[in-house]
Image (tube, one colour):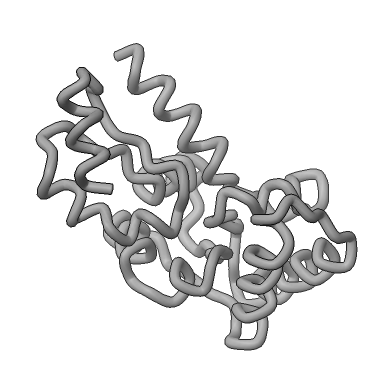
Length: 166
């Protein structure tokens, strides 16, 4: 990915957008290969959360995104408290992402499970939910719950568009 980013920079790119949450795990290694900025999906999501005045946010995503620090640390740096699901729910989410959503399958039972997990996270104090996998927005939407959802695919795309016209 570093080589691809370097090639994009050589071709005239002003910045890099990595269109997946989990692959932000390698942002630091990519940064070593380029001099242009990488628009970090978690940083842009944090800005949207703070605009809403929220501080306690649950993170849904792949197991790696939820459990490892590469994503959560960007939120914590901005003063956001990150809540993740329990181990069993992490496994359910990860399985639905890889075995269904990544394959284009939208399952109503999986949607119900996700919304149950959202309710559990709200009961743990979550004021909003980060859809920290770009495919989750295919399954659940703001109309499905009264907890604010932050769809990182939309946030990232909108912010990249705004950055490009600066």
